[in-house]
Image 1 (cartoon, rainbow, N blue to C red):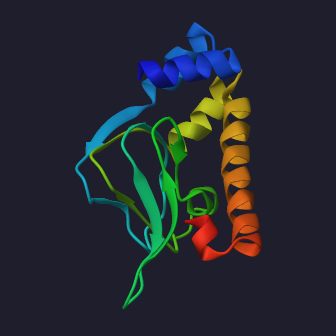
Image 2 (cartoon, helix red, strand yellow; image 1 turned 135 degrees about the horizontal axis):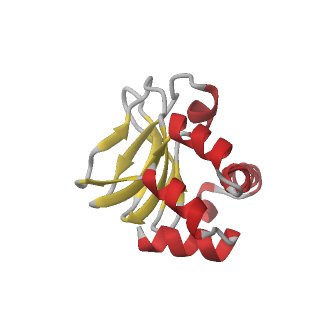
Length: 150
């Protein structure tokens, strides 16, 4: 969790008291290659930070799968729409390599919002990050050919 701690301290000026609360809510989980960490129809319960590995987001189809995103080390991953609305996800998330995630549950995030000075700032940043990623993808879909996006 050293990488995440350094990232939060550098980016947000997280102090030791807030880190103690924040880190007490984190879990580290290692997933093998080609494992579904979220299935279509499940509600996303975690906001995760990729410590190691690569994951993909995709829509399962009967004949083909439609991959619409890849997420790499030192980035956040979540079916964020499902996470926020507490509704089933329309897509799946799968590891492409052995992947280590540092995870924070929805309920624990609410505690962090309430008990830390910087919790809301970190939450806002994660939300903005997800929004900017989505906006960039939508612009790419509207303005580039499939070959250019590849």
